[in-house]
Image (cartoon, rainbow, N blue to C red; front, top):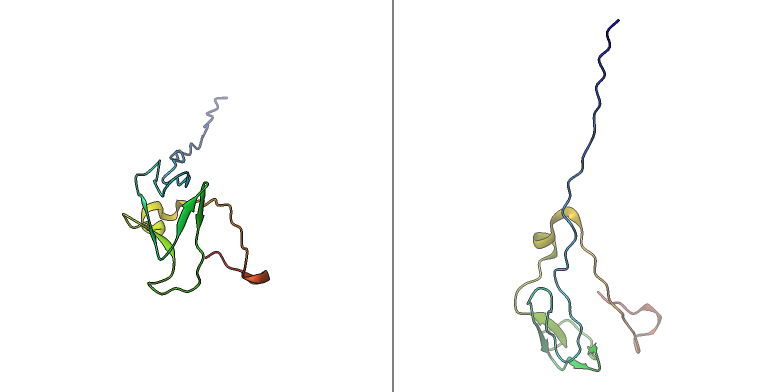
Length: 100
């Protein structure tokens, strides 16, 4: 009796995760990984390794950090996912403060 065996192996090829942007806020809004330097607007400040956004609102006068190049999470990172890590302290909006 002769036998024939088949062995199938599935190999998953995936890209290694790479760091796209990194802002340490040591002295300014420099992106040490991707070169997309932040631009502080409306009174936003950087001091002692912290980005401080003291105002409220979404108008053009609101303090914020924008970027020299758009950060298009959907277009630049695709459906493979993205991780955003931050340390956040809310010191004045009560128990229902929002980050995004």
